[in-house]
Image 1 (tube, one colour):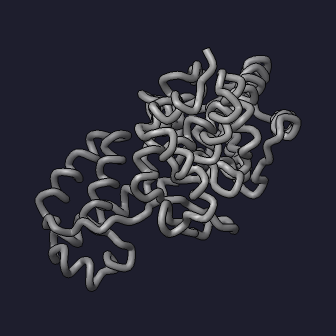
Image 2: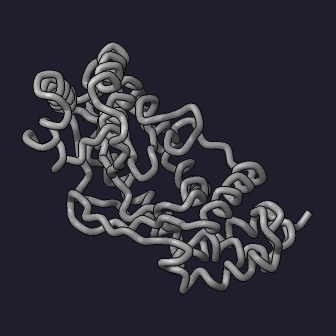
Length: 317
């Protein structure tokens, strides 16, 4: 049965009139319906992140629930980003103690997915044209899939599905392990330059671009990292040593001098190491190495006073 504007409005949790009004307001809605922040990437370029305001945020979350419920997408086994029950840990676990690990990064993954592509995906799933047009106007900004909307992760996985299958088939034919975490593609095994060239050709043929500055061959005996975790040994992924040393040093300084002194005199404030961020790091470490992470969690909870709820953007990579 075709999916109409009324169906879309019901799933979004508002009336059809309100939904169409929001749709027409979005192109000029920056500052009222959403805010846009710009971050400099480590390796050059900028990243624009959208933060939706109310009521756009609630509608976006409702639409995401609608997409995940109605659209018949099942994440392939090698996809670990934005999939329930999978994580950076499950992603990295597929590449332990391999002869060579090849990491390839997609250029501008979300923004490279156009409104035209999203509309075609929705119409293929039974959306009437007007419903698809309105939905597209609510999930894209400036004609592109943005970073920051609740709907972008699922739609990006859906848009990449055919390429996922092509890459998976290729990896299987070459006896390589393959995983994808959002825009981070990892292959491992007996990797050669030929594999990199063939993978790049598959991506190019399906309309995706490789960020060649972030392509890395990591051979056994040297550093091997997948989604920020060390995979050079069998058993399980590990937190990088530099992160462990850093967190232990922070805990030592807070234990010895107190949190306020650490923040003011030892760089904590400059690094925005507020309570929420410290607890977030400890939770992340606990998910990978519980023996290290849970004692950190308990120590920070005891030593860092509540009330420091400032949040900060942090990079696990």
